[in-house]
Image (cartoon, rainbow, N blue to C red; front, side):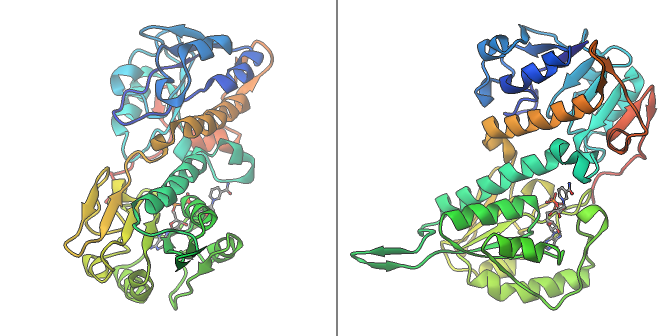
Length: 374
Ligand code: NAD
């Protein structure tokens, strides 16, 4: 049984699906591991390190002979077409943005798993790549805020007088938001946060930050995620948050609703009310932006002197650890599907995790078609 890792093809993608550290877990299960030469270049995983860890490194095609293909981004339709019937792929195969790859997996008779669809139950936590990558993004967001800000984050008592700490506001306190809070706190900032899910309040406080309580209905949806808000509630939330935003030196936004465009938390008017020199770090820039005017991969300077950093491929900005955590997630998922010593790959749809994450199998689609996010 051959597990293959191709080089990531999408520009800006610096992660790799397996790192040398985890190769032995697969070879011990009886898998043969083949890595495309150069696949780990950006993640400090050289061809030599893969070979030393027990993988074969091949120049060129690794897909045609593979039983299992592991990647970060979904395989392109042309890559799916080269796989053998019955092969398994594991990647971030988004039902909203990778419809072509899903169609190609159906045509090729491939069983394609999406890490975005792994159910968020405790047994699946070690396979939860959404969380591991959000962790990297949240950490990075706090560092970006600290770096762009013209101020210190910590309180400093110096011979030249006292420096007051930066006020950091985090909007959206899920996995990325909590990590941004923790990182900003470690740097010494005074942090406050808001989320539509009341359950996040205790988590925010446990990180040493203040939870902002607004007189608004909660929006807790299924699976611990938020629900989309009505325009009326969105407007009220923006109004109530305006004074908190206006007194912040750095605002980090991480709000998302699965499968939807990111909620608009900050309008131009609210941004214009911020002091010149303040910073917005918008982690949701790629999915529509929490802050009006944010652009993925760019720093936009407003007329009022506020800089808005738009996140693009943010976990890829920490390629070593993002890849290390991702690799552990995919190996744990593959291990769940592996039985015996030969090894035997067993796709057991009675298992809630396997059933939830499988997008295609045996020439059929297993999940309904989803229209692109509006
Ligand atoms: P996400 O990336 O979908 O959203 C990020 C955050 O934005 C969420 O906390 C959400 O409530 C918030 N948000 C959405 N709309 C908002 C708005 N209008 N204003 C302010 N905030 C808004 O979520 P995520 O970080 O992937 O996960 C969310 C939660 O799911 C976690 O905090 C956790 O409770 C739960 N979770 C459970 C497991 C598990 O049990 N295995 C794993 C991961 C996450």
